[in-house]
Image (cartoon, rainbow, N blue to C red; front, side):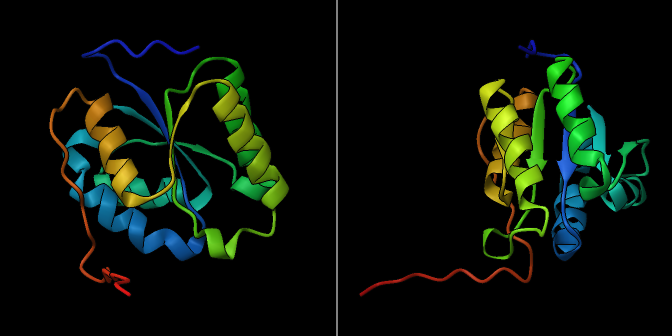
Length: 149
């Protein structure tokens, strides 16, 4: 199990399919000061997106379906990962869904922190950075829908 001592650099993986690229750019830019305090790992083009947005080095893995998910699993098994920020649309699960399920199951059973939406990603990042309080980032194009029947 990984050690999450305060005031230490954490290793955070960021994973996102192409249809979530805008969310990654907006969220990472908004949280750039917190993200650059940590060691970042990302699959595929998400790593390039983070490097371009944050102007910092990101350890880039293969694209998720082409070995990146497996590389993340290896990091989990080696206890070299503290959290996974995994932006995905549950309605449009990736074609490689079994690989995603294996990764998520391993992360859960290994007690790795997983955030799968913007609100949770903000909370996790603030907690890992030792920040108190909660600030929820809503991108400019977000629609808040209330179902009041």
